[in-house]
Image (tube, rainbow, N blue to C red; front, side):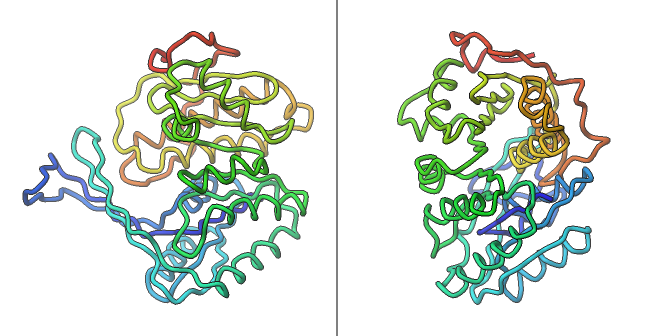
Length: 328
């Protein structure tokens, strides 16, 4: 079982247009309405590929209930905390070239009692010893970066591994806390944390190593069209997918994390602590993420969309290689 926590869920409305022109009237050619938020997207991808998962999130009586119903109807187990403020709605505009414009609401204000209820629900779920607790996405008003650090400590108190994918102050807080077993920043987020550019493989690997909070921790750095780097105590592995035609990049990083975790829970104990296991994790992550970008809106990939054989890997790639030069 993989439990995801989405503190700031959303109803995502994706509009497709031929060409988006700012300041003009734009006509949409199609629209998609999806339950979303990074943790929810991770659960959706896991469920679609047969991995047992449950999604935890706060929900109000309108938008939140719609999200809960949509997930339940798709077969995903949901655990919600009722809140008074309305869950956010986000708008994504995608043109025919795959360029994306996003307008995201801030999210609901969570009061202290609602936060306590959410934490209590998560603690109860951890009693069942899931394989992973995943915290992903932005934090709504009423929560700060310490929330994810608290979740990591709570997971470890129950002997459960903790994965996190966030940005800004929340990512900085969890990176400094050293409680994450897996972190999945993208290249830009890693540079923001470092406070400098990280143009080469060596720059990324060396800085990522400073973030490893325990001997078994791993950093998965997504590099967009340049693949992804896995960094852990055994070294680094680059994985890249054969070229694809992008449809939408929305949610691709969430599918990347879901792929990594799906591979991890399928490994034997012997395989898990090996280079072969690392290759399986990062290859699956890139395969799922690359499949996601070929699908519309926040559609998550299923088994028929994923081509693991299209992923190529390099163990301990040259540190002098520029990130922008990484490709299959």
